Image (cartoon, rainbow, N blue to C red; front, top):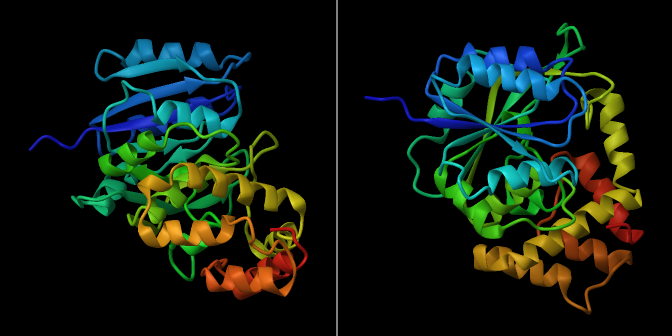
Length: 308
């Protein structure tokens, strides 16, 4: 039986320093039936030359396409690629430009999503490394598991580990390209849970996540990082992200379950309390929560203060 084809969706911007190692890790995959679609978001370093050289060397064996990104930020770059009308129907694996995949990454993700008929989003764990790939730590799976109530206020599926099956990709395409989204992977988690799909949080570490000064977002692990996250919940920036994603979900509400739509209506009604105990009670009543008790407490405090 021919192995299931997978399309790797790679987004790049000025990634020349670490891109070759990521490309080499695709070639080392035990699952060899993959294509590579790349959206470069206006790189002015050697990234385009590296990509074209890779396509010249390997394009005779597999489909490798290089597209121009919209140059509207990381989230828009990924979403424009994932909703491209010519992209194969799935499964698709998302990739950052500066990681290194472990050889069994694609095989394990495919085994995880299986042959389910509905939308499935798969995510896994990873090693944190420095710029030279020396291991500094590792991610941990979520304690409470996935849900729409969690997805509205927190992302637990890192995009660089994610795989979507064909129904999940179709769901994303039907939702289109919403404006104002902060994070593409958070949006995937929200859409799939909101539509009643399945989210898999694999405990296996499937890639090395390189930390360096140019990362869009750095590592978020350890006691200090947990404290930083809790403090960030009280800032206005986080509340703006949540509001932007809820607005986008309202525009895509026809794709969601009745239960998810009811939660969005409660959060978005004109007479919804915006601060104080009534606001915190509303979030609790709608099932909104973070993955840990301290962060959930910080979330409700932010609601009391009118920050979320």
